Length: 295
Image (cartoon, rainbow, N blue to C red):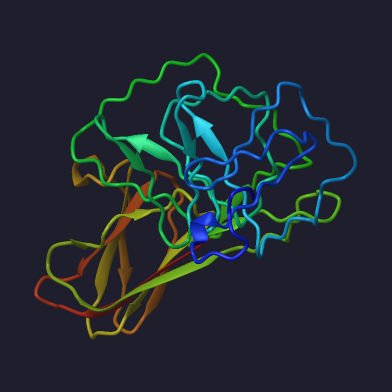
C-alpha cells in the first residue's frame, strides 16, 4: 500500500488489493463493493452427479407453471386443498369406443327420464321399485294396427295353460296325473227337493211357479191332503214361462181328505207347473206339495 502509513485511524485508507491469475489486474468491484463477474462466452460443462439428496414432500416443493401466450406470461397451476387440479370450463371432446369400466352391480343406479312435453322429468317409482303411473285425466284414443303380435311359439318347457271347470259354485282347475291324463271320478247323480206347505185351496185353480225341468231325468209331484175336504189337481207344460203358452197335460186328479198321491208328467216341455183347487165349491182344504227331481 504505497504512500500510506502502516497504522491509520481511517478505515477507508485500509485497502488490500487481491489479484487473480494476472499479477497486473486487481479483482474488480462496483461502487457498492459487490464483486463484478464478467460473462462467460464459452459454455461451462459440469460433470459428475450434482444431486445433493432426494426431494422430500415434507420440506421440498416444486411449482408447475403453464402459459396461455406461448411462454411470455407464466401462471402457476392451481389446485384445491386436496391437491386436485382445477380445470377451467372449456369445451372438451372425448372420443372413445368403449368407456365401460366395470360391470354394473345392484349397488349402482341409473336414473331414467321421460318428458312432460316441455321438460325432462325423472321417472318415479314407489318404495318397492314399481313405476308409479298417474291417472289419465283426458280420454285418449289409441289405434293399434298390426299383422302379428305373436312374440314366439309356446313351449311346454317354459309355458303352461291351466284349464278350469266349474263345480256348480266355484271355478276349479282340471287335474291330471303325472303322465298328463285327466283325472276323473265316478259320476254321482244329483237330487233336488222343494216343498210348498200349508197351502189353502179355493174354488178356482191356484198355480205354483213354472219349473225348468230341462236338466232333469226324472221328476214328480207328491201331494198330501192334510185337510178335511177333497182337492183337485192339474199339470200344465209350456215351452216358455208365459202363462199364455201353457197347455194342460194332466187334469182332474182328485185327492181325498187325509190321502196322498204322486203326479208324474209323461210328456216333456221345458217348463211345467201344478195347479190345485177345492173339489167342491166352498169346501177348502190344506195341502203340502213336494217337487222332487234327479239328474
